[in-house]
Image (cartoon, rainbow, N blue to C red; front, top):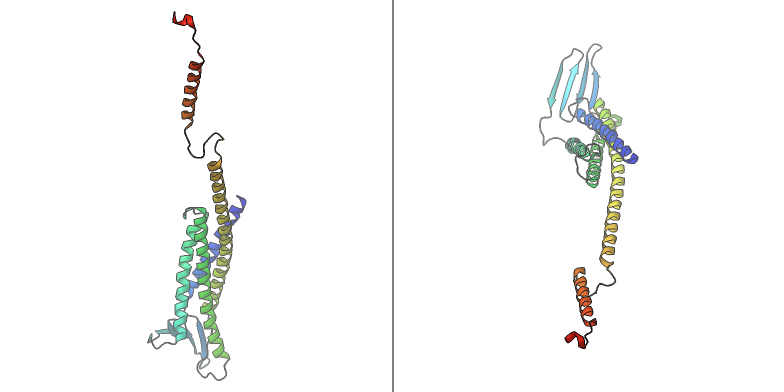
Length: 255
């Protein structure tokens, strides 16, 4: 019982951790500061360029900002398409991981039997791991491209730096990976113990049934099994016949 309570609290902690990580990953999609660059033309005028997965923006010190979405979907590089797809997959899988974990946790009692709850919780942990890996690949790939272009002396175009969304995404992905790993470990351990208990119960039931099948009375016949009342009836008939046979008659009985 104590171990069950510990597992229940661990599941709640992992669920809350993964939920916060998923919220952080979701918050990076509308965030515009994936990359930013600052260009100073004169002393009092500074232009800030920043962009994300969906659009490019520019602002200056006067407070005027303008954003423009990418003009063509098919003209975008494969790198940007891949980052978009991985970010969306991270959000979708994180949502389904939360649903599965919420159904399979021991404190909710929604999934049904204990072994069904453990299986659902294990599936939720694996889904959280997939979400964390998708997010980590997205932000790391984006950061690697920005850093490579910034450090390349032969890159003549405008150079950018890492924005706040990348660090937020890294934090959310780490939370998803940590919570999913712990949740999968405890769920897999519980799944193994539940399977062992089920096998033990099945073996005990089979052995008990076998004992009940082969423990027959010594007087029972192997070929023909007759109810006990039949034997009692035959015994009473045999006893009455014996009593009749033991009666003796003499000459005076006929007179």
